[in-house]
Length: 617
Image 1: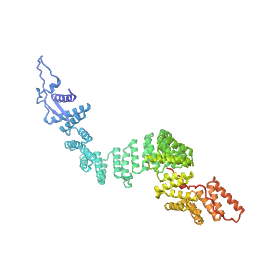
Image 2: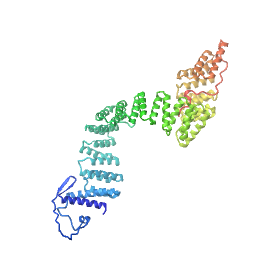
Image 3: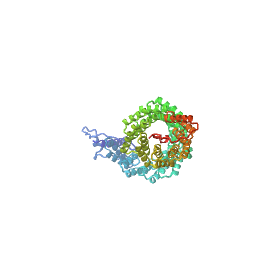
Image 4: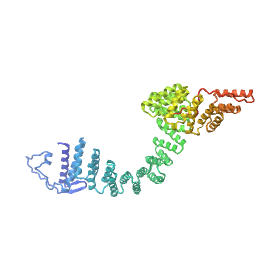
């Protein structure tokens, strides 16, 4: 005998036994039936049939006293089909189980609301949304004063069929039949929001607040809906709505008791509405209740930082490390804070610790090398990036290594790495190769003495984005001017740079040096002095240029003064030191201060101004 047939037998046994002993109960209804007296035949030849034959015999139908009333026959059959479905599902035959469950619901649509909802969703998963809706509508007819069918119908029309205009009447009905059920308000809110009816959605929130629940999660749910309603697409929250949400959060806090999770959620919500300062006390309260909550401590540090309390943020993170010494994200965060505070050594220490704990993160190598370069630890930076390049075939890392080599003045070593980065980026179809890339590549080529290659690369930088190529224009022009090459074109390049950045002191120095090389000393000294006024901190190259120009103008004392300023800024510069010695000797031997008869010879290579030196990627 199959399991489902056994189920029917058991149900019939139950029904018959109930009738025999006087009552049968189904879904809260008790039906009274007369007791039946069992009379024995006392025949010694009595022959007993098996249990199934006894209860399924066509020869022996139930007596009138044993029969269920007509009103309950369908309910009994519905229960039998439900049990049949359970057993079939247990055996893994879900197709037949679904059919049995469906028969059960057809026989008694309101008898098992949970089953109706489940079967409706199962139909939807199979793509048969229409059948699912029919099941729910039958449930709504059978139980018109309960919200479950209306809520699920609203969900089907809103989420499954994307028809909020059809969902709205069911959501509204759910609220009408059960005005104390918050789920109804949530559903109606979502429907109005989908219909872009923000005023109606706001009205729903106002009505929901009147439920006046003492559950903090209720108030936090209202906050979540408010953020959905008022926040912009970029996540900004309007200040005009902060007061209303603040009241909801205070209600949540008043019912939170000592629940640290609630306090943490309140703090998170304050951050969402851009009230970070208000979040901090709740993060602190959470940590009082659970001092080992690393996630909250991290958020607290972020909140301190956002409110300009960097020192408190650092202290919070340092405290975190005591409990979480192996969490590399904390070291990264600390490193950034120390870097912003100007403490490069502490920043480097934390970046190196992050790198030690997470050597599989390429960005850790880049952060570490960047700070090493800033601290002029060139060999260490190069070693860090060479290790990164061995681990990760990423064009960005190769490019960073080229920059590090160039910064360390290993120009000849840097050039093939630039070329490798170029080829890798092209193969990977990355956007790494931009105007900045060609500028840095070109500047390195110039420093290596490859002037023609440098000019080609700098022209490429200009070609890619002329509107942002001020540095490339200036560098190319200055390179030629300093070598007495292509002076007219060089002057045009420098002027284009100044068209883009007219108050750039470095570019004005290049223009003044161009006039100097052209022999226009009056205009040269004007531009050079203007450049000196604009550049901060002072640049020894500019002071040297001014000194050279004053010498050519015959003003030896002013020339000596500016050379001495230049040497103070660059005390290892032997060229400037030699000019000072020559000027002092000449002034001693020639008190009349005779003007120089020839212009000074140009230097062998140009000195890039700070603005035109290679930049980090």
